[in-house]
Length: 148
Image (tube, rainbow, N blue to C red; front, side, top):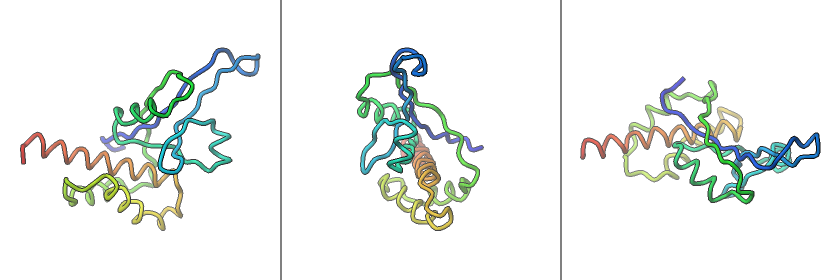
């Protein structure tokens, strides 16, 4: 397990168990096009919407707050990175990028390099992209800390 966590978000809303007539539902934040949307696991399966992953808790909470339509309790949770993801190689690669590279450049390069290896699995690609951005943020923080 790496020391650079990534995050995913859940929204808890409603009252009472749906089996007993309540309307409580826990929805995950999913990537839809260029944005995010909370939806049930069943709807995400039908729409083939992958889980949205974020490099920092603050970014996860900001995206969730902007996407919430039910005004439920939002919780950004740490996600255990899939062991199929080559975190060591990603970290090495990102450390050799310029700290001024944009987030899109970093994540798209990682996705392009892993797409064939993971058969285009959107969940793994999302986790790998978020992990690469977490590494990129750490590099940017070092530059800021040492005033390079």
